[in-house]
Amino acid sequence: MSTHDAGHSGLEVVDDPRGGFVLALVVLLLFGIGVAGAAGYRIVFNEALLSVHAKETQTALSIARAGLRSYIGKQIGVHQDIVTYSINGGDAVVTARLVAETDDFETLYLLRSEGVYTDPTFTGSAARRTVYQYAIKREVAMNHVAMMTQVTGDLYIEDDAHIDGNEEAGGGCPQASVDIIPLILGSGLATIESGDDPIDGPNPEVRELGSAEFALDSIGIDWDVLTDPNFAVDYEDVWPPWGSCGLPWASATVTRFNGNVITPGSVCGKGVLIVAGDFTGGAGFQWNGILLAGHIVTTSNNYRIDGLVVGGLDGNGTETRLDDDTHVDYHRCYAFAAGKRLSHFEPVGGTWWEEM
Amino acid sequence: MALTLSSVIVTLVSSVFLTQNNFYRSVVQRTRVQDNLRVVTDLIASEVRGVAGGGVTTAESRRFVVRLPIGMGGVCRAGAGQGHVYMPGLSEIYGNEVAGYARQDGAGDWTYTADTWSNLLVSSGSADANECLTFHGADTVGAIADFAELNISGTTTLGEVIMIYRDVEFKIDQSELEPRTLAVYRGVTGDTPREFVTGIMPATKFHYRLPSPGIYQNSITGASMANIENIRVTASAIATDSIGGIESYSY
Image 1 (cartoon, each protein chain N blue to C red):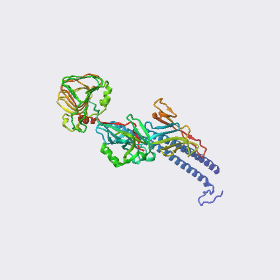
Image 2: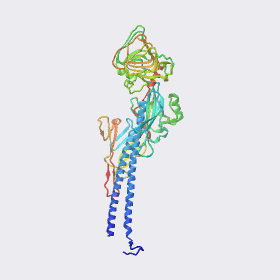
Image 3: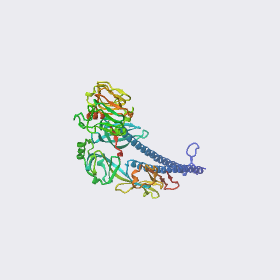
């Protein structure tokens, strides 16, 4: 080892050529540790990122599927062609495309739902998944199988009453001029006074099916859903404004009474009238459209229903008696127009697929 | 003295370096294993989810083949031996992948028929869209290319749904990329299965469940395959350090 005077006050500087080797080695190793650490961190971070993106795409798929279900469940009546639902922190954009008008009762639609989701804790483009499902739109609330359907309970028809399955619109609308059976009974029996032949329409004028389930299957309504308070209607336990009978059918409503109701007299309303309990028609009352009642109470009031009538839905089996001058006449146009207020989608099973 | 001190420092730093290096190597291996497993489960789950009823044609413990919908078309103009359909994405269908079509009956069950795309597709475009619009009110706006006329055996029904499907095969076999392990292969109609996940261990298997008896089985054969309601993959992967010195990691 050699030293020399550095020209300062007695300080000595070591001038050993091996002195820098250890420092350089340590620096190199520290650099290596740093590089390895950075690389490891990057790999773990990328793995975490991949995991998050995988979760994002799965969430997007869930949102897309939930969007389809929401659309099918919520679009009652006149539907929207495109709807956006906010679900689980993302959005489902659902569009409906008409594929074919199968007949007056059904239309085939293709529903497309695009789920979009971004994890708020990570930046990057949103995850998107798109699913499709065919769905049939039931264009009317119920099948037109009979002018009057008595699901449970006997039906007694006095000779001055009138049940008519002959279509009375007479070509006034595209679906008109199709006659139907005047009367179908589920579990009950019919008694018809013979005096003035109170029942008209194509033969057989009366069909007794022997089972309430058969009757419900025939007309195709879900009474539990229609009377569920969660099923939204236009008017609940109150009457819509009267005098709508002369207005366009766009003004038709769905009205539901959750208990019994006695209608006012000498008024006219239209649409779908759901009465969960007992329905009692007032004198001069007229309803154009569809009446669905838990029980139709015997009354001597001369009311009139033009469209379709279903009674005995409460399952109690109480007899109904149609008294003097009560008229229930089949009006296909009214029944169709009113039924459209309850049109809804039903998915075609097994037709779900994802856009790849 | 300085030499001793230097040696101690170098030894300590080297030790830290080696420890850190081993740690990060193990992290990389673990990551690779997890990545492989995630790809297996995600891809298979994603594809199997779309299988319709009766869509499983082979169900073995290390191989299964399913019919996956490429698209589904709603019949908007019916006829004998043909049907006009609306099928989103129709113009983008890769013909070689098509294995056939399936028709759905009133009960919701599918009947599959093997066919080629060139035989199935009669025409597509504005004339077919116009047929559906004119006769049954189809909404053709912005979707003219997705309307087509298809050759379908029998008479089609207005509103029925027709599926165009491809056969997709998944199998577990010896890896070509990493011969010491197995791999998961995926193949579609008319194509050789390709390796997409390596480092798979022999414990990896497919299982199938029928509604009755409701337990997972290693294989299903015959008509029972039409009733398979679940496919499960039990995946196990391994990553071995090619340098040595670190044990293998598996999950």
